[in-house]
Image 1 (cartoon, helix red, strand yellow):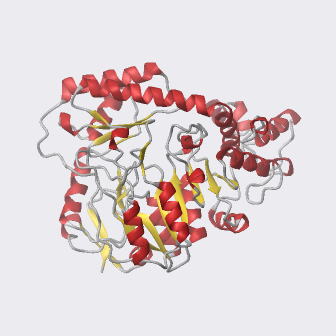
Image 2 (cartoon, helix red, strand yellow; image 1 turned 180 degrees about the horizontal axis):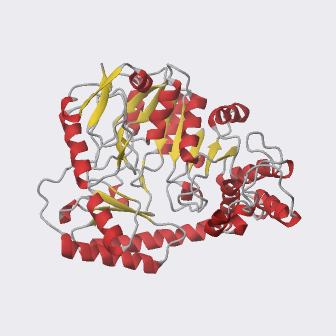
Image 3 (cartoon, helix red, strand yellow; image 1 turned 90 degrees about the vertical axis):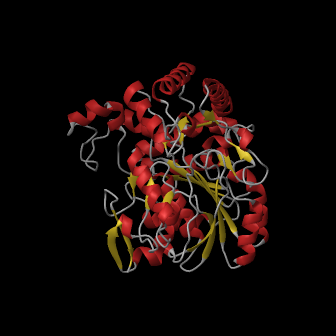
Length: 482
């Protein structure tokens, strides 16, 4: 990484030049730097709406960058150790889907862990790729899914030598990392690409005490959520390419679905945030790790909770752990994670990332302060004292291995009928059911609905999980194949 070059922020600098020129706008957007929408100015401020502009020659064009956007992308590639970086304004969902669309054609196989984000399976609905699922191990005490063992990946490759790619979570939502270096080496020895979902791994690139990043491990592509731990605006992300990828072809794939009216607010936030991480990321994420480890120790000292960390590493299905993740197992105080989530928000004005059946996740990053950690720890201690109960009738698993009988595309577009949830046991699902966050499907199109899954859905609804993916918003009915 060239530190001197990293001090630049070319797209942000171009926007600042435009602001000083006081150009009269006869183009879109129609609010005309906010003059046509004073309420928008009051909400966002003059500086913000003043650079909410359209593509023009001095500002380049995201669909075909040749000047300041291209330079900003090149600086991002340098900072992340990639051969090329694309700015993405459709979130990491668009980056994940572009990876799959660029690697797989209709009917081609891709090896994926089943605990992937819905964007992965959505991409296969769109292009007809065929998933070869690897069911991850489940941690016995806390019930969360772990990573893919190298032996599991090897078995999937041997059984499916015609697969074209292997997809890896780096890390999972809970902070679990597979043996990415070994997976890359194995996949490449069979002429398969490796695609990494690094929605929660931006910080891996900026501190060598964290697990290995996808580009350092030799992966072919990585989708990176700069707006999560990287500090850019929500919906702004990066798609990173390794040296073996055809940059021009990937750009064509991105332009199949990416907007032609890219937000300069999002793109400039990527430019500024990349500069911030390049200059200060190592120190910043070092402090984040310290805060997270401190919080883990304090929460475990309360008793009842289990704030887990690198002790989960077992050398097979978990070879690394992202210690910046503050994941806490709550069932031993008799409360589901979503119940603790709701109490923190409603009674203590603390908004955490998510709560599921047995865990909560507090996302700690570069904007947090130690006093915020203390407030969270105090609230958790209070919740245990006031609300803890017995642990009877609590669901034991976050992940139920599915039985797949049809591809996502076949099932999604098949003739279907809608039935009451209780009547779907044994039928083939044709839509998604998931708690969001984290957005990992409980059911995906093409999977058999079982009694265990029906009970899980009922339990998650009863506990107040945010459920989505179904045509019926109440999730009282499911679409199944006729």
